[in-house]
Amino acid sequence: MAEIRIDASKAERLIAQMLRDQGMPQADAGAMAASICRRLAVAMPASPSPDQCRIIPREPPDADDFAIAVAMKLNERKDELWKASELWQLVYNQGRRLRLN
Image (cartoon, rainbow, N blue to C red; front, side, top):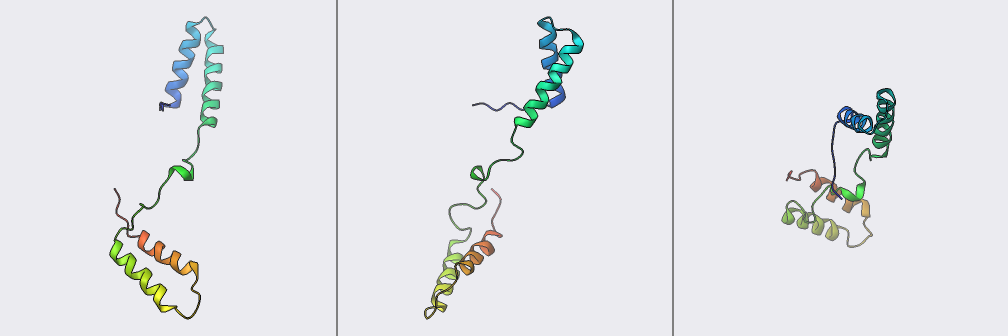
């Protein structure tokens, strides 16, 4: 579906004009247009949902550095279980160095 972006006051004037063209009195058309615009504004999402956002790309920003860091983390803890939070810290540290596309 196509997205329409228009200034709220411009939309209100356009709707009011259309209602007046259909014979509605000017005061009523203005009030109705304002009500329509309020409802439209409330219906619009405030921000994109998380499933529409991708913070980091599929591939690490520097695959070699990340692969080495993960290998070192896995190899240093052979005798004990390492925490998933430590691996996440590696991802977070690498993610801060992402280039903007």
